Length: 293
Image 1: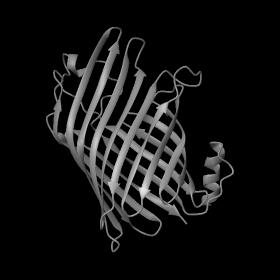
Image 2 (image 1 turned 90 degrees about the vertical axis):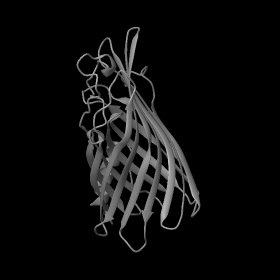
Image 3 (image 1 turned 90 degrees about the horizontal axis):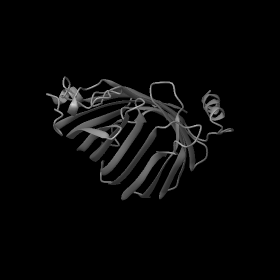
Image 4 (image 1 turned 30 degrees about the vertical axis):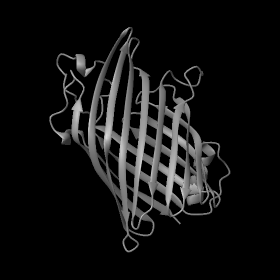
């Protein structure tokens, strides 16, 4: 059954035939991110007469992923992702892993909530590993360009670097990431959303339990630039944040996931006004991973 389902995915995306040597994973995860600029907002909070305070928006986030190993070192994944900055995207990634090196690469297509020509681009990452000691990874994605007939005028890009090391029952890591989406809101207005984050994380685990727990903390800057003709306005919100993710192995095939993140200290660049309470800007998610053996 698992080979039939995943081979169908491969046929659709021209990755056929696919044969799998190990278990096949299916992940479904979803939630809300209230720290979001309204997707349809075309007037900056900083110049608005009635809505100068940042208005949080309950944006639905989530991802659906199918992952399988083709050989002992080669794997494929198909991922559909909904994000409050990059909006909706689908990617197909081939990855090659050895003891000291992992390379991941593939195409992606992005779109917003309105029917339109998708943005076509490339996504990839590289990781160097020293088993039991440390690891370093970096990667990103970018739209190929709006000059192609099969692509829209929008532009999506992302980049991330991460460094971590292994300790007894702990994996501390630091990361820096940015993602940006530029789109034509109407005939006269271009919007660019950008989120930049610096994060410290600690993954905690034990061989005697079926649970893992990760604590996150860091600093982020979230901006929207409104460009119309020769005029440009900017809304910017910065925050120190904290959060967690909990994973529990319910049974051999089933693992559940839940997470929460919230700004602790936050400021807005005037004249935009920050929200009154941090719980107005939380991000929460829950989901599961099911493994077909």
